[in-house]
View 1 (cartoon, one colour):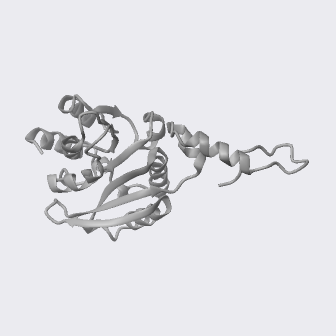
View 2 (cartoon, rainbow, N blue to C red):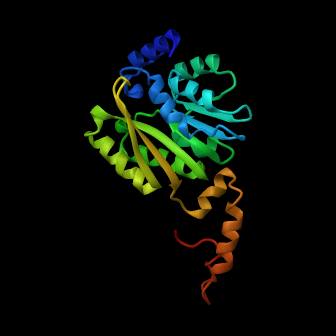
Length: 233
């Protein structure tokens, strides 16, 4: 974290404390732990949610190979402006993580989040988690963190339960005690979703999956509205 990062963070936190949800930017140890899902080979596409002043963005950049793509979605205009100046090779989107489905144009290999989940109501938690689930590639991974001192808050407990609804594997990783405040890393794999959801972000398997579903489903006689591939989840 640079002095400029800290200055920008303090300015936004003072102006919009309900948006930041932290007393200090994430430390390097936490940032590096979150970025472990970023592939170091090939041409991975990585989406970052709530990059803030850019500590986690730097950790992503340290791992991302030369042919990789890094897109960061930041809702605060001041943070977004700062990020564009500091990370010219990163696609900075001034927007809402809830709109991730329409922001990305291809399946994402890793999603790294710095969002203050415990401050969100259930509807917003579900909306963003659903977007993350839908844009991830089949073998993609999602990381985020939870402050240990806030683990008992209703929003934090609800968020942890929701992770099990949206992902088949959720790992409560190590606690980074030297972060301010200490935080635990959450690693999620194998998103649970309907087959048709992948088509929204160009999953190459989506059309084939839908075609196979169409071969297996047959309209009942006299049911004029039944169509292949439009069954329930």
